[in-house]
Image 1: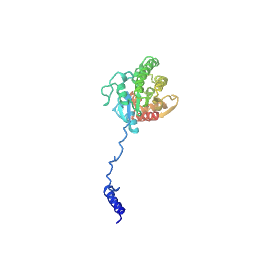
Image 2: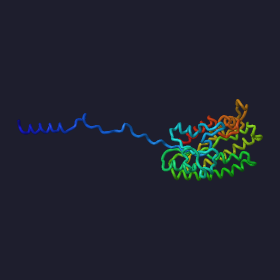
Image 3: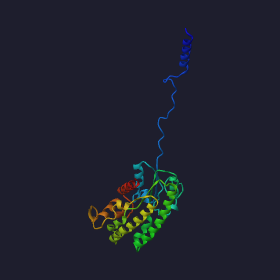
Image 4: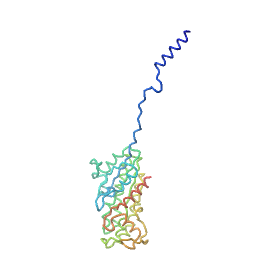
Length: 280
């Protein structure tokens, strides 16, 4: 046998012994799936509108509805009865509070994040005493100025911690429209009429404050029937022929029959829809 044939044969045999066929190569460990992305955080600060408190106890709030529908992890720091000053001075509520104020806990939750959501619903408890003040409009004017200052301080810290996170500020239903039919208010129709001006002023000023910090504004007053002409009447099954805006507030809040400012389940759903639309 020629020498070169022998050499080729030996090399071929050696290669066969030392190489690995595709079928016999050791498998490279692979992950069955990539780790899921971290769930985005939704931080809710404010008052009992965010906690879901109502005349029958605590129920599902607009914040819970928003979190469920958008797949966000809810960190609800809101406290029943909170005022705008309380955000930075009193301990937050909920299991994620950690003894911090609502503002401090919120800043910690969103610091450095690029995505997520913060909602702020505050000011209703500041304004509530004005409903029975001798001069409701003068009282509201003074109070709104204080709310603006407190909200601005809150937004400034949130924006410094998370410049890109979406922030949505909320207002409230004009519950005082319900005084039109609520027998607890002898001058109910006058209060209802005054409330339209009061809420227009409040919402204009507070919306501008949110806008200064690149935040969106959910006009809950408008979404729940406010601003409507009180001369536009409708037939209500309980109260008869009344202004359409009053009838809507009676459906979406407990004010007309219980003198309670909190939303009904339908009211929380309406608020959640307005927040979701503003956050887009």
